[in-house]
Image (cartoon, one colour):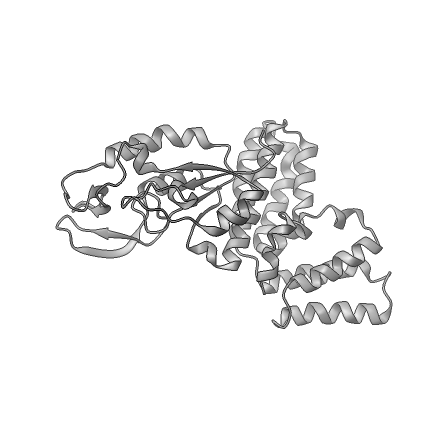
Length: 319
């Protein structure tokens, strides 16, 4: 299995001139920063169904009966919906190993949300459509981290996407290496603090499910359910409140090792983060310093402290 996460990406976002107008929408974050740590699998659905470059623009048409169709804007009766459906039906089963997908915003094939819909007379409707390719992708792989290029400019959404990519990659690797009860329990144990930071109710709900692992004869069936539960929790963007609860919990592990001044300093740094005066990197750095000084086996294994390569610097941009 690839040692790096494999991420699907709309071909135009890599810098390839595959857009309808012969241009591209190269995304700097993906190609200049993330590319060091992942392997990209580019695809242009529109070229994959045989359309040339350049080509007439496509749009999504909502028919009178509510069906969503893909047609050429200059020739609204030329329907390519069937071709796109045939392509997605053949292509999607080949990418079950992916750990994420970055799609092109507003595209009638790749847009994830707010794609313009037209009626059969060509009148502009609301921006509430989903590209045909991405819609099929989301339906087939509901646990897969999928983001649009534009949304990745948001530091919180960017960090959340990358975090989910590396979590799913580790889970996929676990499955590829052969599932065991010990490996599954170990994986979940290492993700406990991370899950708590994302969604406390989800963390409490998934715990009893994992505890029932011994009742499952089919480990792969358990994996399938666990994967969707895990990725659903991680999709919830970690909040300042939840991060603060996790940080307060972690500081308790060092209480007996620190003097009064150190305990006060650590508490103040966490509270300053809670109040928006410091980025999360500040308390995390101090906690990792104390973890190096006073090793704890449970904390040392927690993925929370390093959910993705530190060189990506994503937590530096998050308040």
